[in-house]
Image (cartoon, rainbow, N blue to C red; front, side):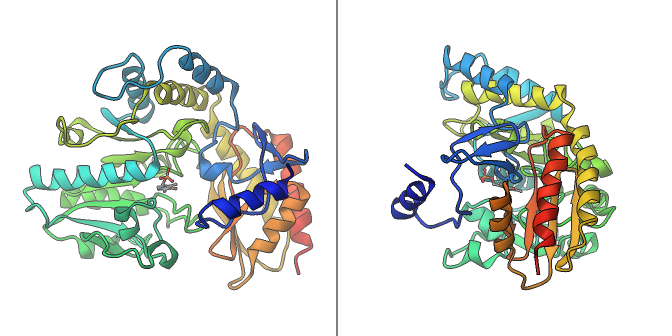
Length: 400
Ligand SMILES: *Cc1c(COP(=O)(O)O)cnc(C)c1O
């Protein structure tokens, strides 16, 4: 079968809830992928940062293989010999007391919201049903009903009502806007340290620190959704570390699964995590032995290969390279580490640029029409980065 055949099958049998770039991937390794016809591409999306360690990292694959030979799923009705070591590793990597494993990012966000609401009643004395959580306009926290109830994106929201109550939306990047909406019923503030889906929106310096201090002063929890920004993507293990703005709850996902399985979690200190008692929350697959083995290996790779420092160094090279291209339609290049975006003029159709990049051998996806995110696997070499930059420059120079 050809690429065209596979695309037809997707379109005929699959719900049309995505509009993919017309390219089919049938092989992947490191920062490169290939289509069934054998054409090779740089992957500059990394499955929305779920393959920070690169496609099919040999150590992660080996860990998965080994685990497949022993035990893959027990449910949490019983203990197993992988979940504990995984949670320990995750707590050591993140610097928090305890972790609660789930599967997808959206479930991690739900878990954080539930923890905060329960904490509000049981520790802060808010009446159940009155809890309020402040979120930022432009956020992306996943696709569940609670997550879309925090959204202002019309595509995500439309005709899915009634929406979950208890969310207060304020502009992103403005700590005073948060402070003005805190009431005695506010239990938490949830933000992405950098808004990925919104087009890599980096808040002003000092914002995260200000939110941290504000939450401490007002006695509300600070929840950082690091599902996309976490695990070395932005040049630090976690994006909040740039400002030492340690959250009370951190949502994790994507690269925790090393590009193999959905693995997510929240981490928090004991006082917060203790609001969960037996039967009050759970997941059949959360923390399963296979996911745990993959999670441990995924964290080891980030650590052993110093991928935070790589992302920082290569990110600087990338942004410097792009700012030299001189394309009249480009308004800005922004980002941290290897989470970057090129913003074109308002109304510009970046889709066509993505098609041209694909033809030149580089895959990237536009967001909000005029923005292209560039986020390669963090294992990309300097030489590969130079070649990718050459492809992007060549393509951008042809834009009229
Ligand atoms: C991807 C993402 C999610 C949702 O993760 P899923 O695994 O798709 O459910 C939540 N928050 C952020 C910031 C994300 O980037």
